[in-house]
Length: 150
Image (cartoon, rainbow, N blue to C red; front, side):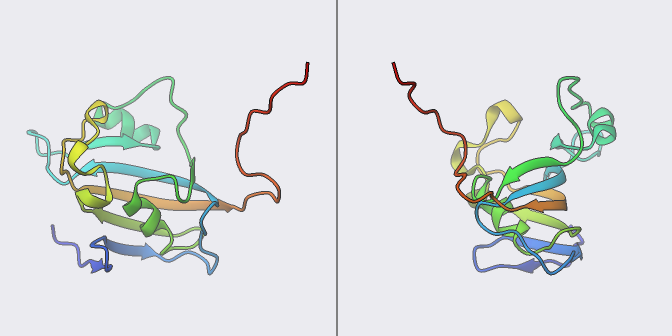
């Protein structure tokens, strides 16, 4: 609540704590990110209401730990995340850190994401570190399944 944010034309609010290097992600790049996503409302015990994280320690502390999850930087392709996440990550370079306050229309909107504990019209907060940017390999457009010749 006391963050001094900058607001983009879309309504995304952000605070860059570390800008990172000059290379910023572009559409189609795979970003390796460490992140913690939380709701803007606190839990009844006053703690952050975390719904997802790539940090094992935070997952355990918040009761969101999943033994099947792989913790550490996670790959996210720019253009395939929620709009506010995509927009915000283009503001920092490799090694950068940013806090995103994403209004619901740039997140999960009126549908929310019930299986993730996100109610309809919920604004979200993400603390994100961009640890690496991987450019797509020429000729690769993602996974495709080709028919097998008889």
